Length: 512
Image 1 (cartoon, helix red, strand yellow):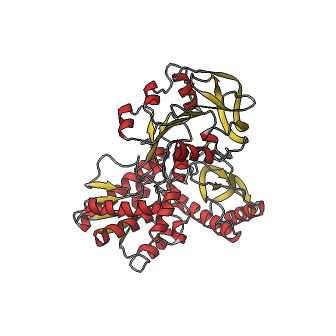
Image 2 (cartoon, rainbow, N blue to C red):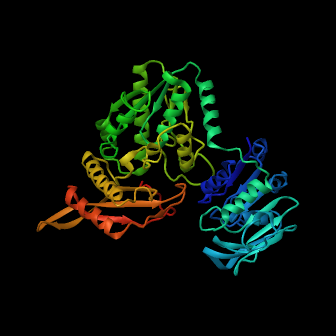
Image 3 (cartoon, rainbow, N blue to C red):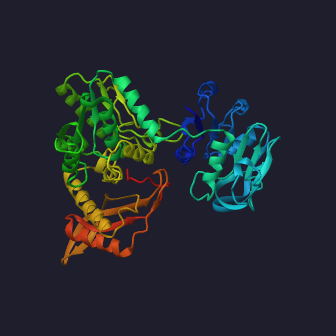
């Protein structure tokens, strides 16, 4: 399988780079800059992309790479820090910029460059740098500039080395997708064989071979990821699969019953289905816990323990299936060089000792939109495939601070009102993700001429293509006013409602 690898220097857009490459129908993975050169060679990549990063490449302790990386005969594209590092290592000069560039910037390009084929001579790019390339390395030609950046792009065609000071992977770079396509499909010569239909067929065959005659237990939450994983396993091993749905008491209002309706005995899919009502068990474990990472790990470990117990009731179970996806892996610090953002309950939250022969994660290499495509290929209904995303730890990470049954009730009721009004306004199809969260803030209010001291609910709504970056959705003020009024009047324990305007980055989509 043809592959392009992304070498991560700590940039915030590392996942987005990989996602953009996959949009070119080319498989892509992220690796740390510390990855051994021989390992990189053994992967036989068709191309290498160096990400941005927060450091200055001329400082002694900054992330670096050796000159040999550029002598492998493999096309290399450096982005932002990666571009500066390429120039620095190969003999160019990188210095602190007199004029720093951040945000949308007019870019003038040489359209004869293979990287800028079919790109407008003057276009808009997204800059984010305090250093700049003051002198390109020997053998490089400058192919783009801005008013304040003399080397916005450079290339050495004989060695197939390319450097872009800006970020083509973000949507703000208006023709960035063309540039990455030109590199991956043009310069690297990739044909573009990474497609969901072939991925689904290959995965089913590989699962069938791996499992053999063994028994499989699937962790089914009812969310998109675990649902796609469950149906894929069902197609691969049939009656050897048992799906266990753990209602941990942290689901959206009435969601436990809705999951059972879809996957249970009278549901749409022919699955062995077991529902475990473990609400009190999870509440007890979370009692007094306020730190987000600890909550995630507790929920993850308790999930595994419940599954182990169910497996013993079923008999010898060889494999555990989980709906882990690629952003879970990277954000949990298990891919690339970026910091741990948060441990996902089915990745970084796993306990050290798990009583199964092996864990199968058929979606581990996919981004969210790829998971949806795989679901459609498997014949899953659009209604289920495109349902609102819901994290494995559930409302546990939409409740700031300690989780209690009372707080769960509050956020469930507030979220139900919010989702109902969004649907009434016809906005449910146009907003990427939306939900209500419960802050840990309590404040004085007045209701019915009486003093209250209740919680504040935060409403979140974002638009996103790939869940790597997101912008706050512009919900009409009248809709927000209706939601606010209904929540305060109908949800006991709330006297204030906020709307969260934060983008990702710097925030995450979820609260914890």
